[in-house]
Length: 335
Image (cartoon, rainbow, N blue to C red; front, side, top):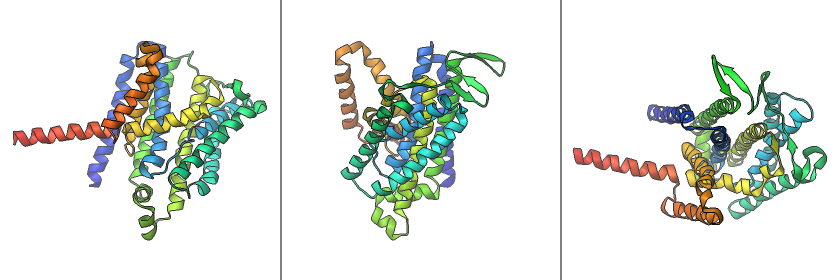
């Protein structure tokens, strides 16, 4: 069974890596690259959120707050205090992790709607702080963020770089970076899922009472996965700030939090690759529906509603189940 899982996990990573390698052949201009880079950053964020929602069964409607904290910590540390980007990202992730631990311990005792409201309140509080602390964050007007300083190599979307003898643009360099980060995010999540921690999380999702009876410290593991998902959000928020070059409190908004949780549900809760598909679909849909003008929002909502009615388990799990069923029928017919 372990060998089958290892093969499956490696197969998923290889498929994702192959897609990321081939994809630039279909990206015709910088706008396409920028769109895909944003997809990758958000996809890595929801991979972390899926650990909390899909595997531990704990809802979070304020996760954009941690994304925003990571973005602002990195922006302030690099822009105001002159830090290098890597230390800013690392220290920001640690700081956000500590905040998540302190906040998570009491609110994760709640269940159902009460937990949803508590996480929603956390997101609102963070957004309000970012809006009001004008002297530090720039308030509603936002603040500029310097280009990413990667071990002395300044990565700007407008730059030109040489990699292994090949001349690449700034957006191409960013694409390579976020592709590697996304693969690492998926690799870590998949390894965590099959570790003792992952098994404890799945037992908590199945039944907290039963998990407690067999000796699982449910409070500890719920807090731990909350922290891990917040660290994911913080790091990706910091990268997002560097890539955009300018941030506003909108990065911590309620709308962003809802977007994250919708990506998890749409792609398939508990499916690491599924939530990536959810992120891609929700980022692409507005572009595809732009021609509908005033009907764009209506069409967007209608597509999501129909998808969840006919694919309640999410896009990837449903598609996988259909393909597997057809393959079994085909194999049975040939036999």
